[in-house]
Image (cartoon, rainbow, N blue to C red; front, top):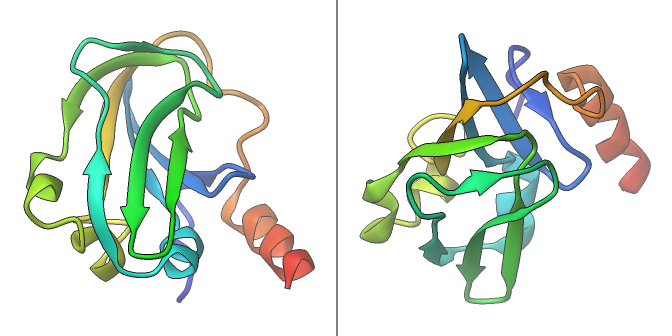
Length: 127
């Protein structure tokens, strides 16, 4: 799968889509493929304040559970409630219908966020 070029990525396999002062966050195609079929998602509470690196959510598959870390500073303003009944949306389309949560950004985007090319290079090194 080709990485969406407009997104920014983390070394822990989260992605961020920034529109004005809102960041939509999910996990990458690579992350969901490592986990396998997802069976449960624990999303953050609305209005929770997150800092870069905070535990924000948990995704569970038949194989493992994985923490999802906040790639940005912000306040949770929306969660993808469809995932409660259909966590497999993350497996099917991690960059669109499988998003996890949205935050209202506080401050600047971290310089540690990777471009699609940088993230792809990191994945290539891991293989």
